[in-house]
Image: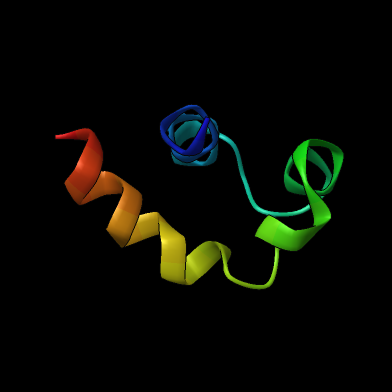
Length: 41
């Protein structure tokens, strides 16, 4: 599930899409962005 969220954030701008997916991912989005990128690759 984490990988799916990271993929969505990749080509989805932060804001409405992030809120719709999960509110808790909004604040730590910038932190999870690089982390998920490493796990996905």
